[in-house]
Length: 248
Image 1: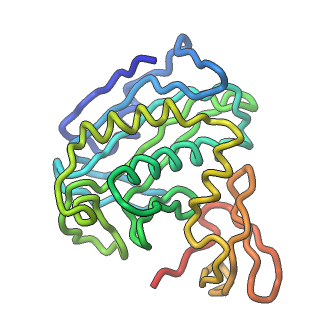
Image 2: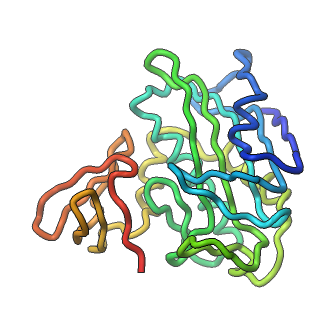
């Protein structure tokens, strides 16, 4: 598989840049049910970097890894699109564990955490064709060499803060793209995702539209819904943005 890697100095959002300028190519083939990534766009700075929903992403110019990938999944039904989130999240954890000497976790649905602090975020935009995913744009913000954060985000951390030295961002990107080729996007990815889930099987505090409650995460459904059992023994299911983690 050949990658087209595009480097740009500045944009409002790499996801938007890729969506506006790159038309999916029908000739971009897939083999064995694995997604094939055709294009990666990397920016030194984003003027309006997005997190999920209305969140923004703080990043000092030239310090972090800000990129988006155009991928073409093969025969993934729309109701299984969470498979893409699991795939890119697990691969990112495996990448970071090459640099950090401990297990990296995934805060549902796809924030990447080290010891309770957020080191990376992922934003995925899928386009459907009938009952299947036609293509996806995966945006990733990874804190690499930034030494201080000034936004009101509660718990950011960078690879530089964890390791004590700078990391080559281009090499980091190359390693990640190689990992995506080796990590299969199939049913085995779900167990790998679950094994890394932040606060898995621990009773913690959460908040939904009705208020705060204590609960334990017990699973994630194929469509990405979070399954929890509250302190009264009742099972709860939440789609994205319907429940919040109360972090101390």
